Amino acid sequence: MVPARLVTMEVIIQPNQEAAAALVARIVARELRSNPHLVLGLATGQTMECVYRHLVRLHQTEKLDFSLCRTFNLDEYVGLFPSDPNSYRHYMNHHLFRHVNVDPRNTYLPNGLAADLDEECRRYESAIKRFGGIDLQLLGIGKAGHIGFNEPLSALRSRTRVKALTPTTLKQNASTFGGEENMPRRAITMGVGTILECRRCILLATGASKANVISRAVEGPITSMISASALQLHARSTVIVDEDAAGNLVEKDYYRWIFANEPEWEEYR
Ligand code: GLP
Image (cartoon, rainbow, N blue to C red):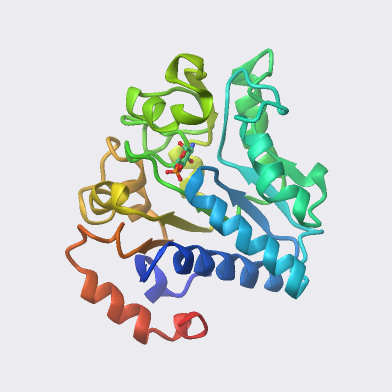
C-alpha cells in the first residue's frame, strides 16, 4: 500500500548527470535488497548507461545480488537479431546482464523476430502478469516525449504492441545505425497502460536537450502527444533530472524543498 502522501509525481533535481544516475541506482539497490525477488523494469538509451555502470559497481563492491530478480525491458526493435549491436538485448547484455549475477533465463525482452508479432505482444503482457507485475520500472524519455517507444498519440491505456517510429525518434537514434536508412521503422513496446500498472516508476532525464520535453511531461497537461505526461496519473512516479534537464521547470524551488525535507528521501540526501 502506498502511503497517501506519496500518491504524487515527485521531481528530484541533482547537480549533474553522474549524481542523477547514482541516485537511480541507489533506489534500485534499496528495492532489490528489501525484495530479492523484485520484478525490475528496465530501459535502454544513452541516459541509462550511467545507471547500469553504477549498478555493476554496486554488485562488484557491495555484493548487490541480482540472482533472484526478474527483469522486463520496455521495448525492442522489430527485425534485429539479439547479436545485432543495435538490438536492445545486445545493449542489456553489454551494459548490465553479463556483469552481474542475474540469471539470463530471468531476463525478458520482447522478441522482435517473432513470426507473429501481435501474439508476441500478448505473450509479453502475460509473462509480466505471471510474475506478479513490475515492482519498479526505470524509464528514459525520448525527445518526442515517449516512454518506451510510445510515440505521440499512443493511447494512455495502450498495452504492449508494435509501434511505428516517428521521424524525431528515427533521427534521435540513427547515429548508432550509421544513418536512418539502416534503422528498423518499428518496435515492440510496452504500452502506456502497461507502464502505468507498474508499482513504482522512476524516469531519468539528463542534459539540456531534454529540458523542453521534461517541462512538458512534468508541468504540462496530460496528453497522448507526450506519453511521459501520463506519469502524472501514476500513484508513485519519480522524475530524476540533472540541472540541465531541469532548466525549464517552473517549480524547481518546491521540488528542491520536498527532496530536502521529506523523511522518505533522508537516506538519499
Ligand atoms: C529510446 C528508448 C526509450 C528511451 C530513449 C531515450 O528511444 N526506446 O525507452 O527513453 O531511447 O534515449 P536516450 O537516453 O539515448 O536519450
